Image (cartoon, rainbow, N blue to C red):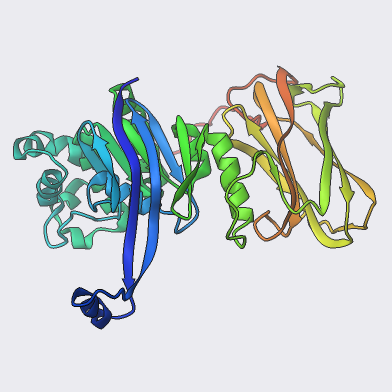
Amino acid sequence: MKKVLEVKNVSKIYKMYSSNFNRLKEVFSNKKYHKEFIANNNISFDLYESETLGIIGVNGAGKSTILKIIAGVIEPTSGKVLRHGRVTALLELGTGFNDQMTGRQNISLNGTLIGMTHKECKEKEQDIIDFSELGDYIDEPVMTYSSGMKMRLAFSIAIYSQPQILIVDEALSVGDAHFSAKCTRALSERKKEHMSIIYVSHDLNSLKLLCNRVILLNHGELIDEGEAEDVINHYNLLISHLNDKEEKKKDNNDYYGEFDVEISTVSIQGESSKSNIISSGEKAIITILLQSKKNLKDMTIGIIIRDRFGQDIFGTNTFFHNMTIDFEKEKKYICQFAMDLNLGKGKYTITAAVHTNESHVEHCSHWLDKAADFEIAGNYGFHFIGLNKLCPFISFKEIENEKR
């Protein structure tokens, strides 16, 4: 597979001065008056043709810095980046625009800045305007644009610049759902034309959908790389340990927590099938066996059902159902979720968790990914298309002619 980008042992270190006077003193003396902040530390990875690579990490992990280095906006302190083709970046919203100029004028300005010739800008101007759906606003000053309109224009210019590598940093999170879906389709089409994408987003489901591979950054270091679902599970682990500065990586990212309550087993069984092969619409029971090591009050037990792509299909917990869950030390418990599985045909997994409040972020006792699996293989009642069976009521009648 052809490499279009090589990031080799890249580090970026910033010198932090307490004052401009200390910066000046350091110029004329051998003494150090600064502290070093390591934004990126010895990062290496490759990007291949037609691949979408996701980058995730908590705030301050070094994502924006490595993107700016790849785009050529800043230089690394050490290491190197080898680019085998044009790189276009959608970084901070509005970068490269002149607010006093119209949208049409900014097509030439921004296009030139990202490597297009003046002739290319003119030839593709109408295509860019049509894709952006800005209409008459294209001849208004950019200073009058909303953030969503700026994103439309920036993305349209970027996609028609025909880059070998496109960097998208949270750009699709700005604006309406219609245009975000349009952008996603455009990215998929460009991938077929051998464009490669580096995609940064806090929308974990979009990462699972779009990315062939994901890397995880933490404290400026690359700590995990691989399939989207596995790396995102590791990211969730980091979220649950935000207060633990030394947390780097565990051997198994499928489970983590304080283990003051442990999930022993998780199983699912259809009411009729008596197995984990279940018909759509059939009632099923998810059973979770637990054991407590401490006396704990106001706890939450939850589940997430994911499809074969790792997308969250459905999730709920006892907190959302206003249930009070208390544990006593050295006692065993059973928790069951009973529901009609109105899901489309396919294979699914169940994640189970015990934590406080509505999510695992504050205190997680035990998080267990892929705790059980099941398959929807048949169907109760009417046939349908898609992931969910919504059971509509359908009416039909003749409309009587209105009297004039």
